[in-house]
Image 1: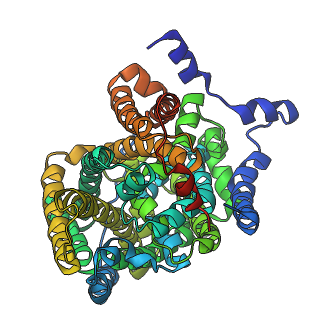
Image 2 (image 1 turned 30 degrees about the vertical axis):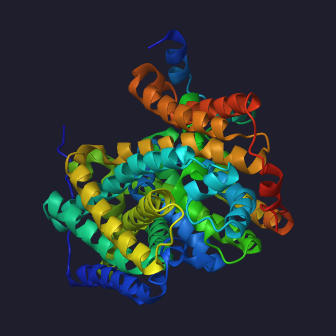
Length: 57
Length: 496
């Protein structure tokens, strides 16, 4: 295992953690969880509807 | 240390009746489709391009989802929490764009040029007169498709073994026999219609089960509170390493390169209907994927220790939770949904492999320039489907421990070779036949090599470098070679 590889694997790339921990010390928070588990799927479905209305070749 | 109680799957009459009812329905649909599928190979392999938008939407998404979604993703969410969502988000977005843009061009072109198979498409697009490109594609398809189909049979055997207490080899044989029955007689129509029923079974299982399981915990807030007490990572969608996150999202790159998914796009009756198909397919994909993740999260509350699951295997969570939460008849439907996922993938891949042999090798190479009757071609197609089932069975018996590895490997191999080349063929006029051949070799080789070098394999899912390398090589080689003379006309045929 290379040093870089080891670094990547151990980095634990918690984007949300780093971002929200500044705003809310009690991270992991409910906002992130609900956003990913409910708003993200809703957003994907809305994107599908939006693009299907305007898709051209 | 206190010994953890281990549960096992139990059956009763309701469960067995629901499961057997499902199998009879699937085989019945196969026989119902016989008359239509027997007219010719266009009917047998792509439903004569008369498929309804809802059937195409559901068939395309369900044939792309194997038991990996039901057993693998639920297990992944159980093991690592909501970060498993990134394993499904990638392919959902990619398939949305495929439906809306890629599929439309492919359907228009294949309809105007009478392409029945994916090698047909490449051959027409690049004026492949000597058949080198067509033959190369067939070889790639057969290698990966047979591996893929046998992996599905093994998954079916495993499910029978853990579910009904049968010998694994008996389970493999039963799975293969059912798939063989309805695919041989019903062809593409049977496969697509059964896919639709299978999509419904999977939807019931993956939507109903998490709702009931979470309600019985005391609601979502209660579930999250309990998960937090176990480990905060179980409510953290970003608790994932960068390599894993990229690898998860990269799974979606496999969708444009899997011929059994591409064949669905070619079968729709009107390319404009792909817009509706995109919405239907995406809604189904989203409900299934998020349902699988919620099952994993709820499962962690019911089974806090993995040792409580049979064989301490996280992939046993789905049937175990279903048995705990649902009426036996509904549990039968859940079991059926596992087989639905397995069979809907295997049947589609079988047809693609058979079409490569009959259409691309026999009809277009061996009998080139000769008129072969459609009845004869359909008969040969059925014989080849049966032969491929036998070959896949033999292969499956010696690769029983590698089932999910095979699925991912086949997905990656096809995605890396066929994905970038087909995208460039549809979107870049400068793409050449030599470029595509180089890209096909590169994608396949990089995927295999990457997989066998542990340092590389552990850092990134092999599909991503394979895809990138094939795209780059196709582009570079195309820059230095001459495009087919009919390229302008070919692009005109891609539009409505």
